[in-house]
Image (cartoon, rainbow, N blue to C red; front, side):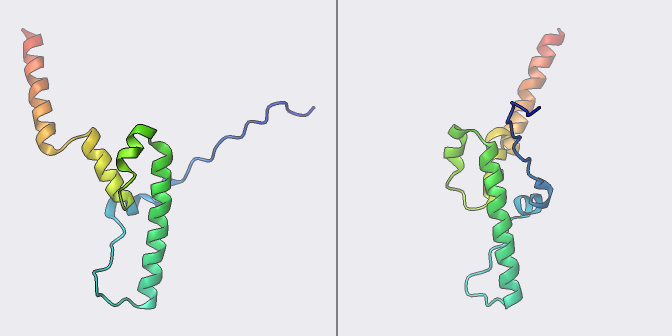
Length: 109
């Protein structure tokens, strides 16, 4: 009997191979630096991985948030922007921790 359900599950990307690009960036060559053919090929491969990582990040991010990060050049820029937005800087984290400690002391009494 033929299946009536034609549901196709979207493939989940294997992101581990792209994570080093997100974490370390693509390493843009210094302006005026002369690259060998091997270095050019490696940079092109890193750039392609970065584009794929950006695509995966864009697929995972909600539309209103995507509009704020759409102008970012690399996947690392996107990731750093998202970290700052949702996690905050060290100064913000300390302030949040202090507020939580005050609330905790108040609740303990």
